[in-house]
Image (cartoon, rainbow, N blue to C red; front, side, top):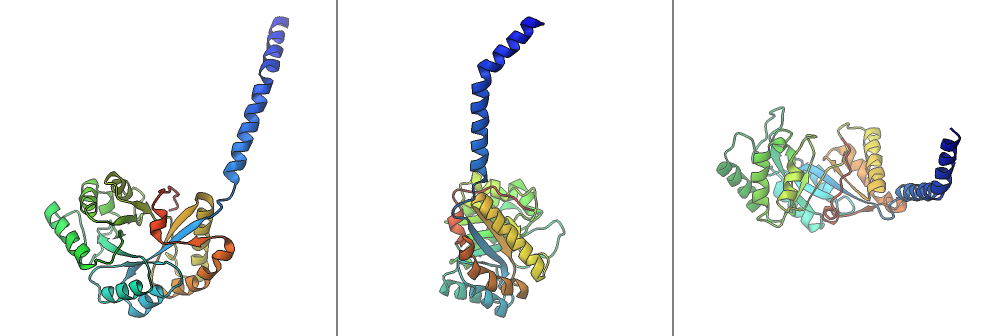
Length: 264
């Protein structure tokens, strides 16, 4: 027993400096991890534009590089693209994709029932119709974005164009962003939906979540919609970002490096 105690005492004395150094290193790592990001950036996408000219116009008039995400073949799609282009807003095409609920998609919808030729022709016509877009995102799509084969067809076609892809993340098991990366398409995903609940307090809560993610990870992406409350909130919130040390940037600035923050 006495010999065992001597051995334990020897080991403690021998390795105490090493253990102390290890504890200091772990403490330093924790301190670094807690350091705030110096220049957090956010991007805000407003989906579903092209149906409501007054709200579409207000979205295009918001300060900063708000991303105007337009639905294909809607009555005012080309009008809002023109306004967004005049105001130097990023423009993306919000392609309707099949949802689990099987709701109607409207013109330009992509579904799992389509064979590859038909799927690709529908997609090609949309891309040709709107040459001012910089990227593509999915409108709905909780079913289609989980289908590996159809996501490969989508990304195969997008890879022929100088476009990026934004996964709206309408399904937690979406394969869209992963497949885009496999085809070397610049891509990222939505972190926060701003206005699933359409009142000021709910939008503010989601906006603060967006800012917190940006502070933690360096960047974050929000999706909103052309609702009066969303327009009103952003008109007030965007001018205050600079004093909070947050920068609103074109989404193209967030494409590299790709982040992996996740909020559902």
